[in-house]
Length: 373
Image (cartoon, rainbow, N blue to C red):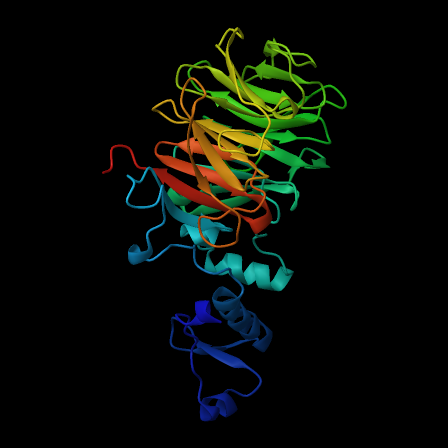
């Protein structure tokens, strides 16, 4: 395998092996020799092999000569593909030697992405909800740390669909369990907020300025706002096609001013509300052309006010202005870098755009090229 090329294992001559016999030897600090059981030596060798061969390929990055941008030249590029990742090692997070040894002995180790749906990024951290694996991947590259959140209290995460980071907490929408599970940055569950049975919580979004967490309840056709203690502070919607009505709301975003953007999935539109819950805008219609919506999913807003909307049927992300006018599209169906297969969630952190590329089992990272000519 190509990704083993840089791995080097110690070479032992046949004479050394015969001399060692069934036991390995280790010199102590006092100059004396003591026996190291062969089983432990075998484990150490297995850990070294695992470190070289059990991981996933390095993150996908195009060569500089093959820079991937949208729109294509000679038009001015606005979006650039940066990288893709499936596991912590793709972000430069390497497990310690003892973690590798424990993984070999126990048969465990990091679970790669199976069907990532929700994604959140803030303050250098990235969280990915993965209902296919039944867990949330939490990455902190600055601390070279990768955690996997699997349970809250006595109950395992049943269907973690949405996730959002806010301050020192990770909020998880556990759809079939009808709850929001709250974790700290060490992966410990600190609270669980029960929701109405059948509410099917999906997308989450956070408003840092107001310390609010919003959840889209697809089953009850509502959007609910909570404070950090789990108290309800806002409730929007009911089933319908009118203003402030929803037909399976699924994904959410909040801009810098606290405005709330809702993917109103089966009304094939985006609805916009101010922080008090007043309707301030709506755009979108069903169709298969540029700017139309077919299977709208994840949504995000950048600092310039551009609205990014994933469409799973198009395998692409469409971009709109503040008034909902179509601007451009990026992505496209496929497995290659920059291409998508039934994408779902989306998050924006600074100029970085994170897309949960669900059926390619990865998250892809793009960059908004503000002002590049």
